Figure 1 (spheres, rainbow, N blue to C red):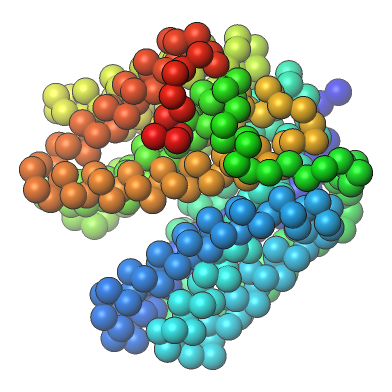
Figure 2: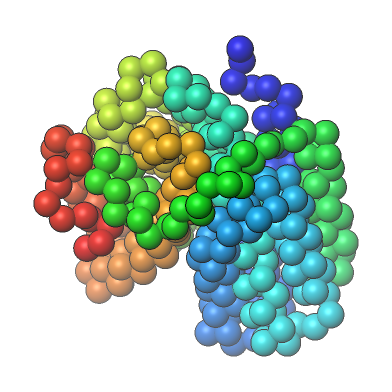
Length: 381
């Protein structure tokens, strides 16, 4: 039986529409606030409020899914996201946008937990790598499509919000024709915190933290690095598109390889390739192939690490584990760019790749230890 059943395909269609909306808003919200003449520190706080909402949404997602099931939780998250998006039209006042973006972050985090959990529960240990690869491909394709749309349509606030809000509402429709059962209503609700302490899933949790650090640094600081090399904004966009496109290309083959040869082996290869890519960037070798392999390995690390953690827990704990993994990734993506930016500012832009290679090397050491026998959890540290 194919991993890509009709409910799975419909769920991915809804996710694609939502991801386009998320990408458009994440790009335009800082620009709209800049046009409204808000100071830089307020714009930064509005952007941070969205990620704080992601953390809050991750924590409450399990209880919501437990109470309402996958389908109704998905509808609820879309409604929350659409209302928070439509609310941006009423005022560009700082406090209102701070609140609306926080609420939007909660809705988006709930969407991600619902989609990841539903996909994992609909699959088996043999095809979860393929399902998560399809999930990540859909996410990145939606992100790229959202950026392309901005170049073809007006970007004024009141021109964008109506169709973005409508797209979020339309994203609810596919799940009216696909049911994802939640059979664990009689099971006690698993908590996020015990998931973080599981020794048998620790490599997966640590992998999500490392993935957050790597991708957060590449997303947030690679444009700055390229700009400091004297590149124009157009050329920076070209190289970033190459980086993300490499992640899209690598998802499906890496997912298949992880299902076939084991996720531990694939994780080791991915981390080794990340280190090689960073060394090549530091040495000044051909940037196009170097960025391609770096994107291929870095952007595929998260789904493989997630699959590793989820295959070691019983079915009724998948939602709680997905919450823990998403929270680990979010924490990594928040802390990684912050630490790396400080090092780059005080020393050299080259420390972007030194930092990425260093955290990858730490994870490589963990991967060559016997699983479940690390004396102290890296996540706790």
